[in-house]
Image (tube, rainbow, N blue to C red; front, side, top):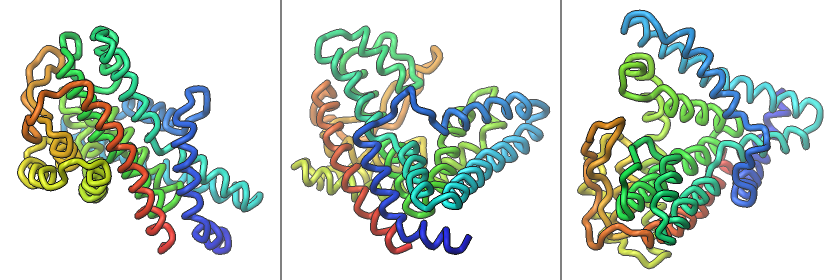
Length: 323
């Protein structure tokens, strides 16, 4: 076992690199088996069994759910990698690459942005709204170009952290098992981390765990995005000021970091009025509106996120090598 993990640690940078390249080239083929689907089914099954009783019981069960799903995802991945290594190191290497690849969402995120952009540039607002509705929980029915573009940019900015930088960071820190454990945290938050009647008590610990897991990557995203903006000849000084001024106003302890920087780099204002289930909510504004948000900002944001994604690979490889 010691020899297995010694070998795995020696090739960890290659696992991270190959998983990253696979994600860039292949993305997320729907016909391929995906561990997150299994995690999601497990969460649904446990939620049905555990999300009942008094608020106190629901909160306690929510903690249990998080521990079981995250711990189970780590242990199952660790066991599978160990088993693959037992048969042959190359098999373990390939399996680890595949797991890391499934935790990353760089290509699928940029493709999702493109799916909104194409109909939007053609003036097909109806289709653009539909495509955006797959990315956000807000009501997109009556949104016009500026609001559609804003929602898309916000999604690209925020998901740069939890869809790209965080899984890359945890893959570099602890290989496939830790990357999959993070993916379990992220999946839990997306399924039960809502502040509504059903999940307010049951999902609180899942939501907090997601905040904790993304805390450091969200702050690492700031210099990476600023450097990406510099390479894209955007106003880094302005973006830095927007980050200092606005990041803490975001309802998420992490989301304000990438969103405020992206808003500053693009010279736009994110946040504002959103409608959820027929109710109007005000989200803190990020950045100054140097120009109205439009489809071009999606183009520029995709370019920015793509550059930042490749820049993120450098510290990830260094971390994997040092560990």
